[in-house]
Amino acid sequence: MTERVRMTVSINGLSYTREVEPRMLLADFLRNELGLTGTHVGCEHGVCGACTILLDGRSARSCLTLAVQADGAEIETVEGLGTVEQLGRVQQAFRDHHGLQCGFCTPGFIMTITDMLRHHSLENDAEIREALSGNICRCTGYEHIVNAVRELAKERGPLR
Amino acid sequence: MKPASFNYVRAESVDHAVHALADAGDDGKILAGGQSLMPMMNFRLVKPSVLVDINRIPGLDRVEKRGERIALGALVRHRMTAEDPIIAEHVPVLHYAMKHVAHLTVRNRGTFCGSVCHADPAAEMPMMSLLLNGLVHIRSSQGERHVPASEFFVGSLMTVLEPDELVTGIEIDVLPRGTGWAFEEFARRHGDYALAAVAITMMRKEGLASDVRVVMMGVGDIPMRLSEVEAMLEGHEIDQPLIDGAVDMIREQIEPNSDLNASSDYRRHLAGALARRALSDAWARTEMAAS
Image (cartoon, rainbow over all chains, first blue to last red; front, side):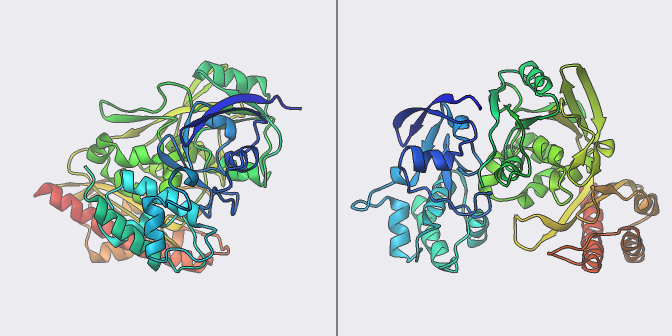
């Protein structure tokens, strides 16, 4: 039997302390321990991008991260960006541009795009598509997602 | 799709990490970026009894220029390699190659040294460490050793690392001013593992190629240096007939595998096509540097 590990993590500004098995994935911790089911689990081996969260401000696959690794870290998930009544800016852009259909991949895209908008220049469509290339969507054909990001990048302006 | 149980050690120092590895016998694993190890653990292809997490060890996340060499610590992530100004200035071929490495989110976590240790035959870092005369710094509870990249890779996903050893960093060459370089890769989708790639550095002395280095990956079990091709080019002006000859020689020398993504014949053709572009680009860059 492995020893459980005590950990404290900040998620969307709220602090949580739990004891977890070391093998628990961060994605499962968010969903099963905390009930934060906005983070979706697709492939569970780092290919699809649905489980993307921000770990200390940078996007990471929560299916390739152990919950214990997040001890002391700041996590942001899609729940932190907006609510159904009041969508966040990236979510609103997805709605305006029809950037989703079934919505399964959407939280991962939203979190990756949040990282992109904070840290990447996104000067043209090639850069936008390259930055989105780690997230897979089976519905949209990506065009509307690229449209949404193009608008967000324009609104943000050049990165200083 | 969940890892099997293991005990978790958060290493506070390199000493702590290597002692935890030694205590684990041959059943411990190092966790750095986890972008290759965690999928393998999720699939239970790898089931270590002890996982030694080195992510909190201070000082391993640095890129430092030491004379004509650059040292990258074990926690230098792909994003840091891609954005580092020292690497951009002194090793432009590596700076350029980083554009081909995985996806944004994976680059945030994955490390240079982790990729070298994983030794995937289609990954960029093992090949780049070979091109750049890499020296792998290795620690265990017994001591320290340094292994050149040319002796580090043994087979697909296999290296000379012993189970109780930790790679603490890697040293690579600074490219002398005026070095021509090129990197060419083809993957089915941008950021995916390559079907084949080539990287080249060369100098131009009195109008002739010198110090030529040609490496490839994706065309064998380990990244390979093509010494005979280098010898063919050394001391000559790189013109079209010479490039044709080099491409023919490359296609004769490699024995690529066939797999789901590409047949052996296709990879052989591709390797030649990539090398043709890279030779011409590297030579042109020496010219730009000379003028």
